[in-house]
Image (cartoon, rainbow, N blue to C red):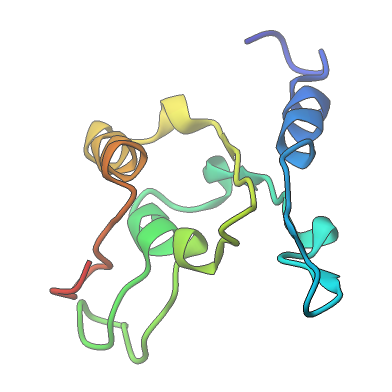
Length: 116
């Protein structure tokens, strides 16, 4: 917590990039790309009506304008990656509750889907 410009983003990046990514000896590579392991997302860049779709994704036909499947940020995340969500306090309570369920259960359901 702190004022704008105090380095919260740099602190989050340092913590996010410090996670352990295992080395796969038989494949001679790491399990994930270090450069792609940390991607910060500023939720204020999305209109309130699109935040749920951008985070959790949606299926074709789930709502007007959903002309194809869309994998949200959480679906595109690496198993070893970090996705800090900036401005989460400005997001509606129902979306915050869904994010809490992701943290507690480790799963989510895209809009218009019946599969977790």
